[in-house]
Length: 72
Image 1 (tube, rainbow, N blue to C red):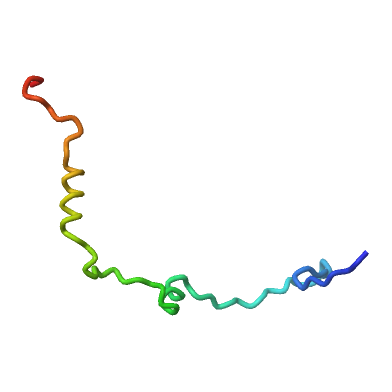
Image 2 (image 1 turned 135 degrees about the vertical axis):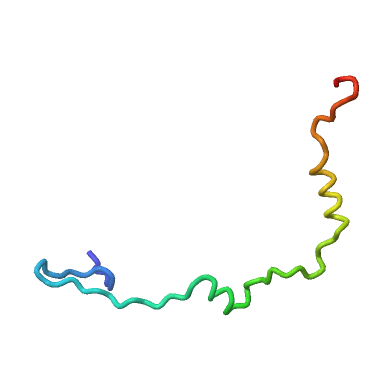
């Protein structure tokens, strides 16, 4: 039987005080995005076309079931 070394597994006596590992300083996701240049700004860069917006508004404002004059 082969014995493998795994530093995360070790044996200690029951009477020994628990060892507390030091706190690791971690970088937040926002800081990492800013540091790596992957955070995109919220500014409009001219890619917004009013024509597309007008077409979308026409679709969204359309009545699903138009009421005919006869039904009223």
